[in-house]
Length: 134
Image (cartoon, rainbow, N blue to C red):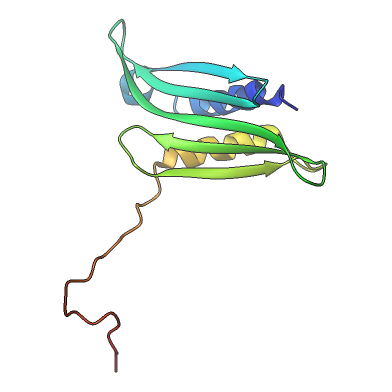
């Protein structure tokens, strides 16, 4: 299954270019890296404006691995430039799995932007942990 690493990223990139052909009046500039021995691949997404330098937009990290029952799984972690949040999705190799559809779905999720950051509140000294509502 390691060969699916780059084909999945290619499908992701094609879906991205089809849905957003000229981001910010520029063009997509993507770099792919793969390590088949480790089952890892990364797609770095940038927007290029003419001959100017490119602006980072995010990345997709894909990991291929075998589950305990012997079936294959592909895990994709989506990240966005300037955002602390990331999102991870798993795709299981089943007879009904459409890899192109899964890549298109993840491309749409990435284009929608980062998930809202978790809100963490700290209590000040003397403040009740729970408040009763009536």
